[in-house]
Length: 134
Image 1: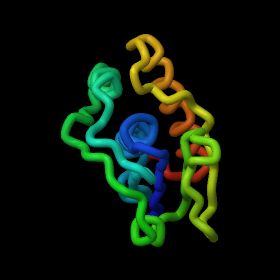
Image 2: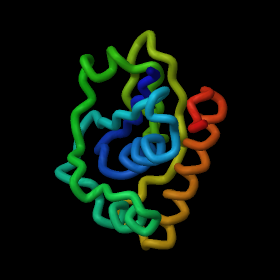
Image 3: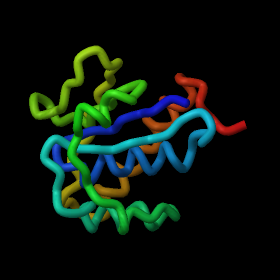
Image 4: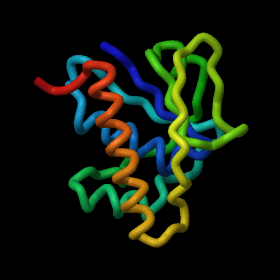
């Protein structure tokens, strides 16, 4: 079982979308997703929850969580969300950075574009890592 840790600063937008997409698209016997942030926000951004609900994925009940050493310890890979120098670093963990704009406060059309960009990157990760369904 591989564990993919999606991280950003507030854990309320991009990292939540990425983890949800991985859970939705990958083989659950091969991979699992965790999302976390260095300074977690109080909730998932409402516009992110709306955009994901449009594609049948519910984020409303998810709570942003702090990135801890314990969470990172069990991960196979850390994927950061383009938060530049604020992105978390976990020494010794394989890392990728996805430079995606922050959806917070953006109009729904922009949030949808970000959502679709996250989905495309997750699909590429699934193919590259061999964790697809079937």
